[in-house]
Structure formats: structure tokens, C-alpha cells
Image 1 (cartoon, rainbow, N blue to C red):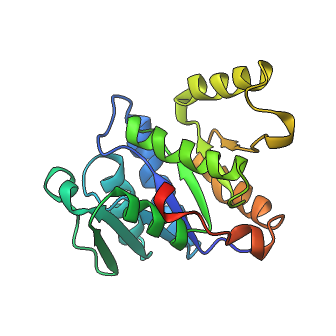
Image 2 (spheres, rainbow, N blue to C red):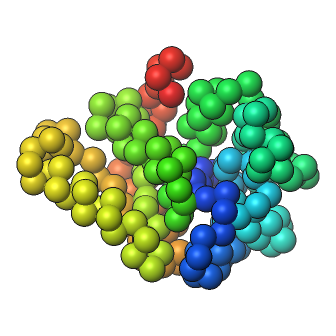
Image 3 (tube, helix red, strand yellow):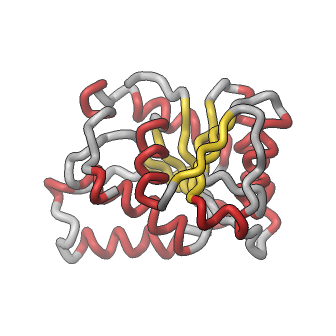
Amino acid sequence: MSKINAVCVYCGSSPGTDPAFITAAQDFGKILAENDVRLIYGGGSVGLMGALAHAVLDHGGEVTGIIPEFLTKRERPRRLPQELIVTPDMHVRKRIMFERADGFVALPGGIGTLEEVVEQLTWVQLGRHNKPILIANINAYWDPLLTLIDHMRAVKFVPQALDVNVLVAQRVEDILPAMRRAAHRVTDTEGTMAVPAERL
């Protein structure tokens, strides 16, 4: 798996209080489009999700939105010109996101964003896949999570043998280069391991 052709981005369905978060989403959308990397995301048209998807489309990129039926009213999915997948539940949504993506990025977001990126980290730790996972630490937003992970390591709740190499970027310009370097170290088998449907 030496190429990054599609990236799953987890991010907030709200804009947050820091204008830098929206700017980062827009800038990263532009970068994805200019590098011919398809965006896989939660399908919403509001908040950071909306800013990200609109930026990809505005710069000629490709987008796949994946949203469960019960969220369609709250997050108002955009009828994208490429692909919108409406799933029956969150489990199917996350499985399709996993299958379609060559790597995962967490922009700022709330509990849902946290849950999604931590789930990917869990599956890497358990040996279910080895796709790159990157935390975009815009304006130090994810510092508390990174500190917690370091604390878990220090008290041996993350054993060295099962440690997870989470990538971190402070600037959106650094995201794709870091993911591409990591992808070169992943074999095709590691990148396509099956995640049990009942747990994803």
C-alpha cells in the first residue's frame, strides 16, 4: 500500500470557536483536490465537515460522503456530484469508511471524532490493520489526547509490544507527506486486513 489515493477525515459537524479550525479544513480540502486524493468523510454539509467537502469540490476534487439515515436531518448531507452513501446505522457507515480509505486523519472535532479516531488506533494496536492514522493538531487542539496517550504508555496500559505509531502534524501542509511516508512502510496485506463487522 505505497499510495494514498483516498483519505478518511474525521472532524466536527460544528465549526468550533477557533477560526483556525475552519481554515484548516478548507486548506486541507484544497490540498486533497490538488493531489488527486479522494475525500472520504461523514457526509455532512455543516461545520468543519461541510467546509472540508466544499473546499475539495471547489478545487475539482472527488468526495465520498457516508452518513447514517438517522443523521441526515441533523447534518444535512450535501448531494455531492460524485457519491453519497446513506447507511442503515453507524456500524455500516464506519465499515465502509474503513474499506474505502488508505489512511485516516482527525481534524478538530467532538466526541464522535474522538471515538472514530480512537477506534482506528485500537484496531491498529490489535493488529487488524496498519493504515496510517494522523492527528492534525491544529492550534494544539489535540494536546490533551496526546498527553493522555503518553500517560497510558508511561503507566504500561499501552505495552511497548502493542504500541501505536500515531502520526501528528501541526500544519495541514504536512499531513499528506507524513501519510505517504508511513504508507510506504505498510504492506498490502497489512493495509487490507479485515476488521470484524460486528465490532466496527
